[in-house]
Image (cartoon, rainbow, N blue to C red; front, side, top):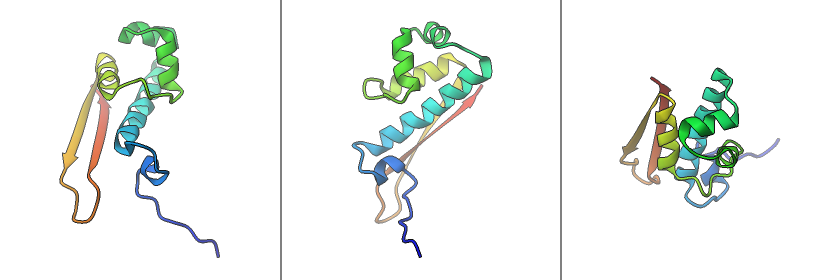
Length: 107
């Protein structure tokens, strides 16, 4: 029989990444950006023009290199692309760490 450990729901927390809630929020936003890019057949250059940055910045974001890309920048990009972004903060259950959830949807 193989032993396993049930995950917390946040892979970044599970692997000990710094600031795991922010990392998860960014990852969810990148998934949505990739969906929009695919749905509309956008190139990285076109996406960069739409959100007002250069193509290398878009390339970094879409490939998951997010250390220099802030949450507010990703939120702005999604809003410029017609998405609404909802961030939910809730009191954690007793004994659990605080959590932040991010939801996006096309307008």
